[in-house]
Image (cartoon, rainbow, N blue to C red):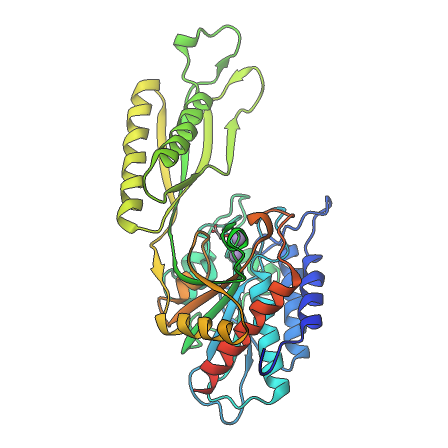
Length: 410
Ligand code: HGY
Ligand code: MN
Ligand code: MN
């Protein structure tokens, strides 16, 4: 290994410390967007930014930036980012690793007095997970101009709150206009959240593309009736209809010859009691495919199935679009830089597609972007068992340091 290295003790201790911030009464990590738990994580990040002597900026959708400028760095900044919000009962690395590694890289470069032509910034984007407010990757979507900031601030959460009011309540309704920082390039370091790198024994993933994501909410209206007296032939059972949809989606994805994946992750029945046939079923559908034409076909097949099912079961069905992102490809030149940096560190790499959504898929709309993955133990993520070995966490941060240094100095 050659050249400057990150301060691994500082990076690892911050990851562990931040991993304890925003836990609920059961000890689950729940930094849902714009909650007090999210605020606590944000506040800790801002304290570390200020301790590092960086300029702190917050934009109107609550994206937080730490900037390092020098007298010589008059060119457009290099941005390193990810997110600090988590899912319910999430892991300590998803998002936080990329944000803290970005801060670590800038702090290291600043301490070493690296001569930079481009300022460096680290960003934590608001509501990447989309667990409370849709769409996901919201802060970076607003940042790249894909969603109006007023529309985003008016978003109503699945708990009935309004995002803009919550953002103001936690003190992160910033003044900067989203997109205020025109960037030369964007880098994101993230855990793979899947099994491939570990199974193949490869430490570094070079993410060349990211799949399309389709989020919908389905509401099925049936008729509440007595569970004991209503003949099976006379039921309008919203619960059964939902089960048919879930089974269809799973079987369709398993039978598909494409890379389609389908998930129903959230469901609720009304009135949700043991002896009443459900009058309503409300659930979410997450469809993904790296090929836009195939994803569109998946959505069309799903829509036709819903229409047939409504007639067959005599239920009413409505579908709400929650978010839709097309597949993206990342910058070839930056991908080669990542591979060269890994080679210099004697690390094997693998080109891969990201199954998960990331802020990079938004920022790539306004600047060349690339992602670096490190292994997820057992491929587990969105789960408190999420884990990446320390040497991999440090190796990924050192690759990020090398590529950021090269981009900021050229
Ligand atoms: O859903 C995703 O892929 C990301 O974790 N928001
Ligand atoms: Mn993430
Ligand atoms: Mn996530």
